[in-house]
Image (cartoon, rainbow, N blue to C red; front, top):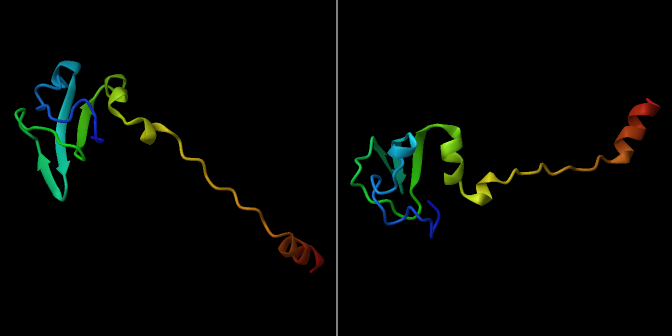
Length: 88
């Protein structure tokens, strides 16, 4: 849960994830792992949820910065190395 997410401050029941066929399997908070969190557990900023459900229903929960694909950094090969390999 990023800071300012609309789920922060709500309980798991109030988020209505169960109504969207999304099951919360694990809650990660700081260094703690809470398996099968109860519905009255209040979500805080920085929490991570491990959920199971339909992909279409869960897409909206992913923060926009994590959805962006990371592009690999392309490095230029040194031309000296390829020229030496052809000479031998």
